[in-house]
Image 1 (cartoon, rainbow, N blue to C red):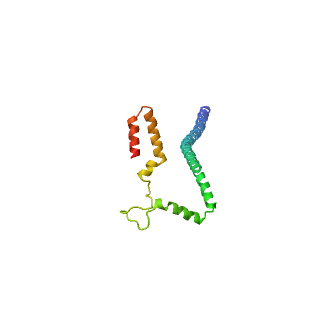
Image 2 (cartoon, helix red, strand yellow):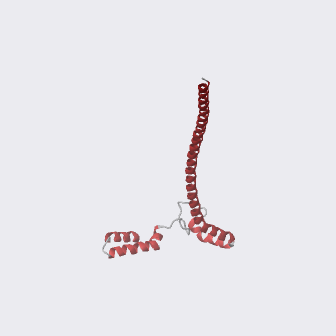
Image 3 (cartoon, rainbow, N blue to C red):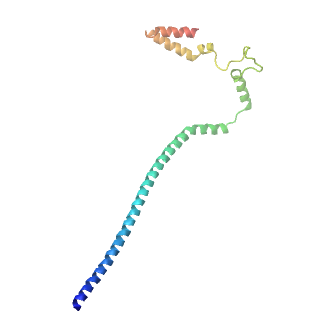
Length: 165
């Protein structure tokens, strides 16, 4: 009987050893699964941050374009401002220019709205000045050409009548 008891004991020892190996492998598998879950979570976070970075890069490019466009618009003004800051302007020239335009930009001193302007001009050109101007002449030329072509004779005559007063 001793041989059979030793065989059973050896088998039991082998089972216990295999159980230890199996438990070690299960523990390793559980650790692997936990690390895989962490890796999956990190991968998802990286994808989310990549999308945010791509959106920020697009905004940065748009901002760069807007700033470049604004700078291109401002460059001529900056050059003009630089020229203006370095230019020497004679005070007498400024006073003379103000005297030339004063009759068209301000009413005379002590002027009453119920009184005529005298030598001063109103801020906007009066109707007779508009009719005598280049723009009115162009309008009459266009109207005359349309009337000569046979189209809009009534309109051309009507425009001439309005222009002539």
